[in-house]
Amino acid sequence: MKEIGNAKKACKLKKEVRQMIYKEDKLRDKLELVDAFQQLGVAYHFKEEIYDMLTNIHKCEVQNLLATTNDDLYLVSLLFRVLRTNEFSVPEGIFKSYFNDNGEYKAKLSSDIKGMLSFHEASYLAKEGEDMLEMARHSTSKHLTNYLKSSKHHDSGLKERVCYALEQPLHQRIKRVHTRWLVEQYLCSLSWASEPEHSSYRIIQTQTNCLITTVDDMYDVYGSLNELEAFTDAIEKWDVTAAETLPEYMKMCCLALFDTVESDAYEVLEKKGLNVTQILRRAVIT
Image (cartoon, rainbow, N blue to C red):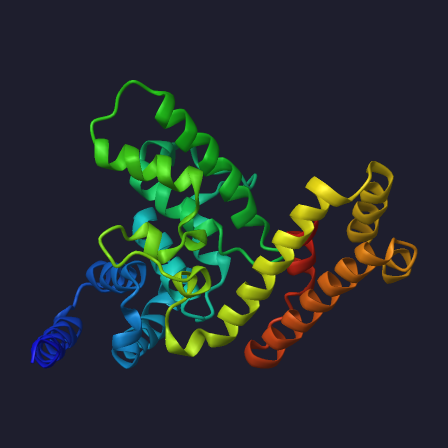
């Protein structure tokens, strides 16, 4: 009976939240609502409503931002991050008004800590070749670090968020750890992406965890210095031929690593149309 009561309560709450989604009319409120749902890990309950909302925002707001100047760095950065996180196409050009003719971050924005923090988080969604966002990441990191060193912190909550962002970017955080008031994680892969449609990701993450553990043990326990140098060289060059010269146990590990990266990249290409091969290789090498 208790389970039935909880289920009814959950259905009622979902209905209330759906009504809240449709009632929001301000752009900032809409984006913050979606962002909150996704950080809480409950957005999958409202997939259709969120998709409809973001589709309308993408249609009405992006071109307008590209054609005009908007001084609200926080809002523009939030819009960019939320839309790109949800696979909507948003060009880095919406940030062009925040840079001068020399391609440098405008100094007057350094006092807008909330906006700079939002821009910093957005910059981690840069695609390969988006130099403006890469430059923004380094610039905002520098300014936010200087802000923390300053003795003038009127907003302790903002200071805490800045510390958190510099330590771990938002999109790299584990949702169930990031959201402390939710149920504690019970499976590592599930805690990264609990939504039902992300089963492929959980498989990939589990494979990755196994490889990380194996390679870590190999470096810590099994490999000699010369063997490990040869293994590292093969990985850095991403050279299958070099892997063939390794000791058998290392060769198996190296080839498994190559195969996993290539197969995962192919799956992303097949399902999302994105070629992430070089990104995954760099992630392994670094």
